Image (cartoon, rainbow, N blue to C red; front, side, top):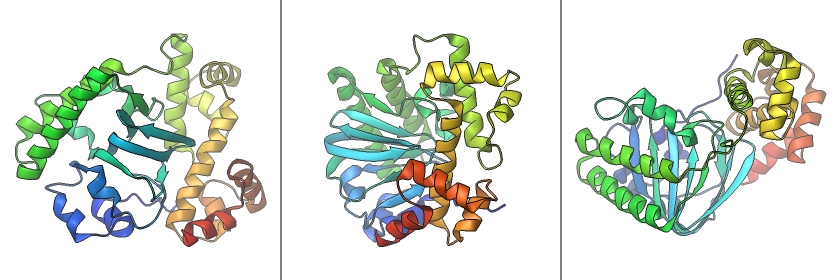
Length: 301
């Protein structure tokens, strides 16, 4: 089975925002970390970025203007003083016409591990999970702290790249701890068992969507009955498990349609459907257009 392409930073910028000026701003090991001002990045975006994914987390913080982005199956709109996270492995896309200022960074989990961080700290940052809430509204005081930390991290990065991890890592951890202090979990007041089941279900979908489409498959992996899974997911996600699975299938298909020249029949097979017509009906139900029309729209953009 062919794997969906995962862009590294150089490949991504070369395709969607080709610019020697932007490349000159990126320092050190780009598979671990990068930071730049949003305005220095967005002015080089030459086309809409279709459904894509990265092995690094991404973070956007605005000081002016607004931004829109699709993360998974949801659309998000953020303004000044707000943040948006794209967890590693999550499907995302965005347009080329936003006008804003702020900071953008990408980082690997390794940036939060080691001397000043640990795996337990990573677990606390729910906004880095595929089931977490990616859109975070900061209060005025926290926004000021976050702005100061971003400015300090950017200064260090521009002057020394990743040479001084003893400076970069503590500042980055402090930044995310500030964010975490005001983060409002989506499921804070819900039943713990149902929350855990739903979160694990969402993680399993991301890992298995290309060959597991049945609710019973995921119930078996969770060692619970399908009815228990259905009840838990409906309580927490406010939708049926089948809809969660369908949405993930469509997102996976959108990445393939954007990144490959596979015929539609092959895309259907790649996401687990031998019946192309059924796949087409499912795709149109969620996107309002056929896979062929979606691919044509991407090429025209």
